[in-house]
Image 1 (spheres, rainbow, N blue to C red):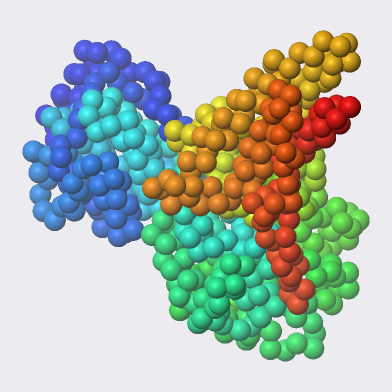
Image 2: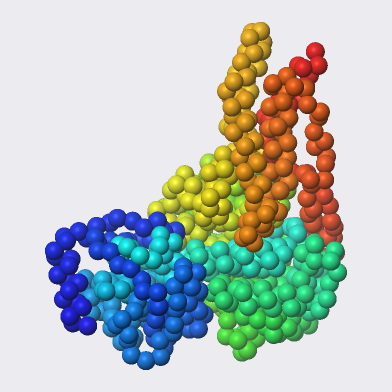
Length: 628
């Protein structure tokens, strides 16, 4: 070890090339030190794991190495100097990884572990005959996060990699998704695919509370069914085996899968003496399926103003947390009736949250901010923290489209803010978000399309100050669509309902040329053709070998096919070919939704609306012009 230390120090002195060159890793890491020394992996790679590293983290390391063409083997004895090694350990454990890191100045700097942050870790490539990677985290979960960085480094290949030391941590503790929208719950396939995506980009929380899941709300006290029909599966029903499979996949990706119950008004009903027992019975049934944390939702059933009812809610919440502690010692996650505090006067809001201040501190209480669609901000967090007496968690209604079901939000973050009519469109993300235990987003009904904005949220919650809106969106499309990312970026402005940015100026200029008697369709035709070609390229997703691609296509299909048809029709009309009108009520542009909750769930159909602001009325205008 001492010889290796000396060699490394001498190499640093000789090269003098410690720098801040970056591997492209997302979320952006806090600090990278890269030196101009390259290493390569041997075909066989030993995994050395300390006692504090759990099996899930070891399996993740094995998976990453295998997927990059290497042959991993968990070491059971002494270090093998003839092969590459991955050393996984806990800070100050004095185990194999901890000692390895400590013996390599300047890599022994442990100041990252003194910060009041989360998932703190160090990852270092150590120069040797074959690549040696040392990862030390504050716990095994932090090491799991570090493996996401290693995975993205290995995407560059397994040979001639520059040595790097990474110091990293998250700014927000719990980061991820709350499936809490009104609409069709995600299929098991989509949910599991999201878990894998979350592991790659260091997200760790998924709260399940799909409003239209009858066994979350209407039949909240009953166990999930053993069997369902094909129609029920289509509209989001889950069986016990499906829920168990989902929970197992979450565990394998270190995603904390929180199952939430919605007992409605029963939680605040003085006459209902059995509500806690019924909830616990349901929790026990979910625990048998692999769920390990639980939530209680009482949102959207009316905000109580009577002090005795507020006291009853607090008392029931305390009793329930105590019962959960007796059995599992886990925190509860609670969405109260007043989750958007501007609904009532400041005095009433203060009284409401003060009524919850006596509940156990470990209960995570969620808000959406001042308004239902607020973007996380320090002012709202501080306001509720002062009333409640502790930090709160943020349920972020973004990029939720249950109020805009015919629209999708797959542009950059700030364009999405502008397009979502319920969000204050000039909202911007805080450079230093303070006071939030958790930030989880309520996504679109299209789970795969939600990956693009989810990527941005993952990056922001990990590293607040480094969020760059435009660069992040480019990185998001690359992460989700790979080789087709450029085609998606070409089509994305027109997949939006509000397509004025894409077509507005060109359409107006063309109309003016017609008015002058000198039609000049060139620039508009060029734009329409480029978008149409991008749509054609994206059709390849349907037949992709990747399940993620195929699921993404299924989400995108109505918008993609309609945009392709619209641009094709407009091109034909501009060229004077007078094509047959497209039937925009065709089933290929249609998708199904669920509305309501509890006893009022119903199935309905909607039509995708891409380019509805400019291109759709322009097509009508062209037809009228051609028919004159």
